Image: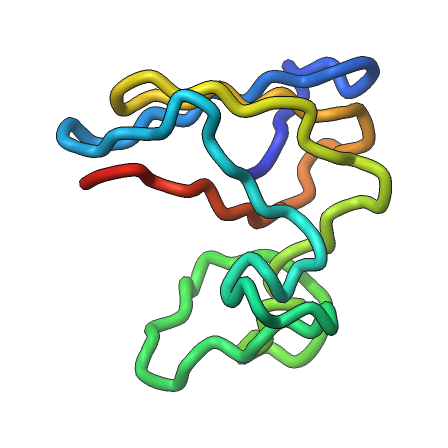
Length: 120
């Protein structure tokens, strides 16, 4: 997820996620933001992000500038979720979820999160 210049970054922020038809989010959906390692594996609490598997093609248009150009580590491709920017709520209905977050996300940074899907 990346915020553009049209977004107010103070107060709470509501992010709307619309999945393809057939996906269903729980009414009280679950969002994982930190530690970053839990986005990929719920039992990984040490905070270290994994490497992008070698069989996954990389996006040549990726402009993140940290680390070597191959960008095989997720930490080189995405920004860490800001400490203290918690999920206030997540409300799902059919294939749409609305996530309310506390202030703290920065414009033009790329953040990862995991949103639980009830059914697809």
